[in-house]
Length: 402
Image (cartoon, rainbow, N blue to C red; front, top):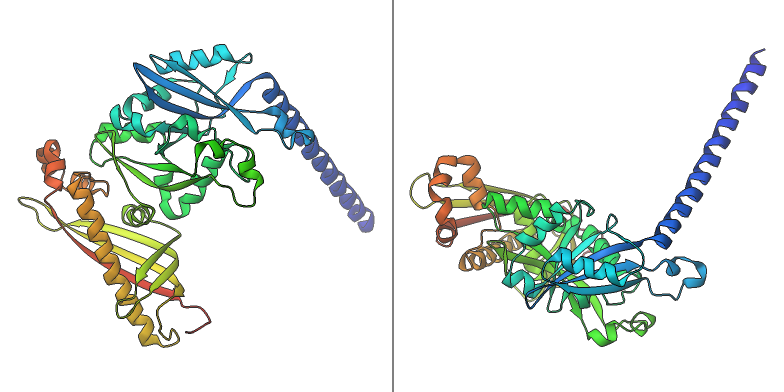
């Protein structure tokens, strides 16, 4: 009797697994058919580009090419970019719709690319407000700035590995989360929040075109072993009062990210102090803390940065099997990072752009003091004293000694 019950339970379990497997296969088939139907009946938008024009805007929509998804369409272009001018963004978008037979589907839009000229002259507030009001646009669209080239041209570049540059931008931003944290996920809600609070200046990732536009729009660009024109996510664009002010380099952006929020995984490079060479630290985690030093007059701050990381590479001649040498490298790295941080803080003070969050600390710790100084905070910030204190804990030095 027991053996029969055991056989029945095993048989029922086998049937359940078979039903689940069939259900999964059917759901995949139905999902694929629904996706194909969506692509064939609608103009599905991957990315939106917005540039400035005389008396208005230039809107650009990067639209998926359904033919590229089929086996026969392997050589097809992944997407097409349509552009139109308008006095307002809705008018420009409507003009694009008039050029396309199929209805425009915005719900899958991944990235919004804002032209550098527009970001400098007009700013970002009105653009983000439009994205928040437009119900067909998803709330999680990530914003990027196109540096040195229009948003329209950036969306036309053929990118290797990923046929659609808008999807490529999305991949780059997701990968940057490890070293930039939340700084890589800038949405319209985030931009609006910064504008309303007016305590910390806005930063948005920027993408740059390396190479010529003419070669980048040719399919030969991705058919070569080494593309002549590539797109790179280099750093962060800094805004002042919601208008683009200046750009941070890749190194400055990585350093700023360590100072701004807790980072789970990043890489930093420090100089060897006693001889020529550099030290590369990998899998760096950060824990920044900002403290107010005095309670009267012009405030001063203490920026404490606790880092943990692994030794990746040492180009200066030193025996890394010696614990004293490791301690020396650690102290040298702390000193070098303090200098780098001081230089970056000085740069933001000269530009009167508090991106690190010193004003936010006053607002949270001393709200009455913030209310007295918030109108003049940009000017006050340019004169505050900031002391930096960096501590590095070495987790691993590897198995090979120099």
